[in-house]
Image (cartoon, rainbow, N blue to C red; front, side, top):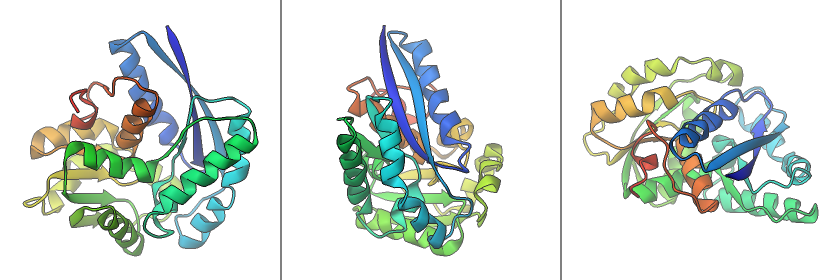
Length: 250
């Protein structure tokens, strides 16, 4: 049995990434029991999803990365998509480098992925070029996310903003409602649906249902992060019930 240590940098008010990501990897353990996963988190203060609080949270990244370095993780993921995308196109490369440098300064050579970069990677892996997205953000932040995805080489054909600024309230949104929310999107030209462009908005239980109903591949920031994480570890990118991205065929 192989044990893999996963480091996560998360907002202090995040309740979802530390549940959905372990849930996916526990499901994978049942399917592929030779791998086991252990999780370590470091938190950065943030309560409200506003540009000011997102920027203040980003400034805490070196400290959070240094704390994780002490646990000697095998891979580290930065789990706040909008905090990175709100800083402008391509910023995930800067953020990943900053975390990597902080880890190395503290004795860890762990590779780094971000949920922002992972979402682009996941869309590319699916061969999607035109996407429709659902976010919990206010419309100005959703616009920034859409522009970031467009800069990554994709066409955002439609967006839906649920407009919930309080991060704890985002975590309490019912994922079952996403099974209807997606129908408000115009997906007639879409190759894929991003059901949650946010690691805080729960969506895992709706991914497969919406994929089955829409006939399109459906992913989220969390499933994309899991896909990238498994790839970085050199493992089979397979999680049952988590959509085509994690079906093991890509």
